[in-house]
Image (cartoon, rainbow, N blue to C red; front, side, top):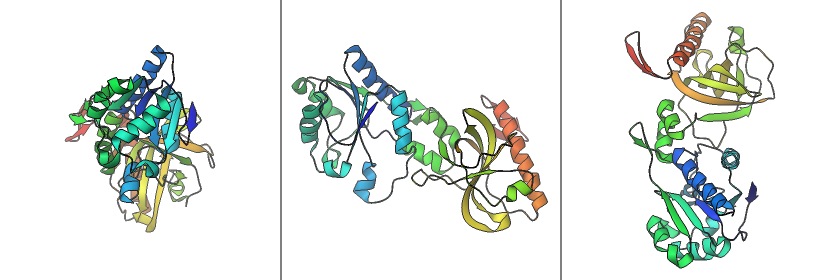
Length: 316
């Protein structure tokens, strides 16, 4: 896969248009269609996207991402894309929809096909849409493919919906809409070792600055280290029992005792176990941590169904 930071001529391309944050179920169909059309016509597939989320440029407010840029690029490559164009949105934000289609897409790519999601907009004030792309097929000689909305768990799959679910800690729904488990990655650093003194050694990482923030709490996670997966209990937020006012991301990796300082790990979120709590003694904190670990064992055995546990309905 080739990555371009500026426009370059690649004629007769099969284009996929979008920012593709999250690369959810709908996004993947858009990209796979562009790849398949390119293969059928012996040409190249190209993603036209941006380095920064358009909303960040337009509103001047930071937009936290579901995936980092590097994570998006890695998935693009796995999906078989030939070329990715990371354009500067600010320099293109004042171009009309018609000019964008004529002077950017047609001039540089002479596309044989353009694929978008059902809610894709482009051009100044978002005046370009599926209607314009459909109407201009004959003029520019491309075939337009619009991927209809996906509905999962009675929710339309969209980045805004997924962000909302992640922001309230609803990983069950968010992961269903994404088609994979929301994750973070980072290098293991030294912590205060308080959990280790209680018999629950933990790996600390810095929560990625540009990732969407999750609620403070304790979570059941899957930790990937050197290609292997382990169950884990992750604490995100403050440490109220020891009055630590610094937000931490620390994970106890179950049945694992190797030294992994300086190694990169991937942490996938499965479900929230509980809110953060302040305990009156280290022994009570230790007892709760034992219960948290036990929860992961229960959850993974019933992850494909529902159960009634101690009178409470768990959606697993």
